Length: 369
Image 1 (cartoon, helix red, strand yellow):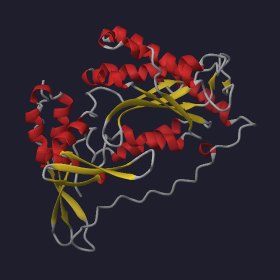
Image 2 (spheres, rainbow, N blue to C red):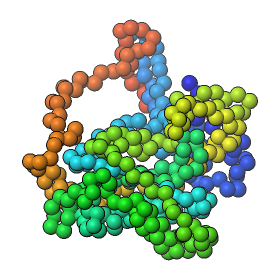
Image 3 (tube, rainbow, N blue to C red):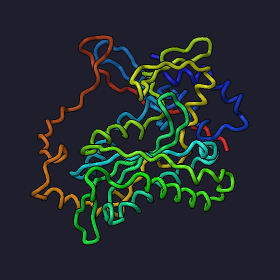
Image 4 (cartoon, one colour):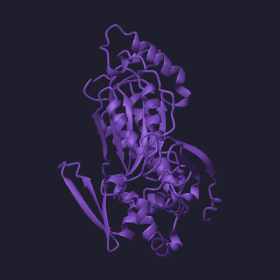
């Protein structure tokens, strides 16, 4: 199967040569790690069959968060941990999108703009939810940063999975005043825009933007998310992976990459052909700078709201009027875990692979300044 790593090995050097004067350290590291993932560069194990004596090399993954081959186990663990955090209540999924006029600035100031986007979205939502006209309570929210479309285009936005209710001033669980929506989206859009304006002013970047940007509506979308589990599974796809999986790649011929994606509007499969250099450019624009967290928690889901989260869970679990949700159904007893055994040998039907040597990784090169 064709992999992103194959494209990097074939055309990564040409990409570095073309963009050497503006190659970000995070992009250079991603190219280096993806090309060397599951090769001798990162070390591994040498295994031998206890029957036929055949030997097999097993190499380590790179661990780079931009690598499509890594983080499958981390995604599963994060999803399980986040499911345990969910309250037994209804949820909404909100999406705050960065206007197109801000995208060029976001590319050149990724850490500052992405952080401002997530903080402004979280603060705007909490401000409106505290208004007693709509809810008057402290909600729980989980935010995930997302920067791409299915065609790998640059489209920064943040998803927030939000509890349909929260703890009021008297620490009692309150439901939204209107059962059909959490807060008015138009008002939320205005507050979100104002908070982004204040954040950009504080960063000294406001003067670079057209004034009409602050007079046009900003896109904020809200939809029902049931008990939150399906939306959480959707968000889990983006926490530990980047814009494209290897399974969507179809071919690379004459330095042209072909991949497919499903159109969200028509649900039809579409195909895109790009020069390999342009494909790498689209891929790398979604690599986040080092140290930027793409998952954040607000309200009673935050680290400072653990006591309130436990209090809300107690109230919701023991409420006599609340119908049970999927997360409240008793879990079946976990089956006994089998005793781990050595993997089977791929060359003979009865042999087992035994580790006979550890392969040391090569010294890690320092990241470019």
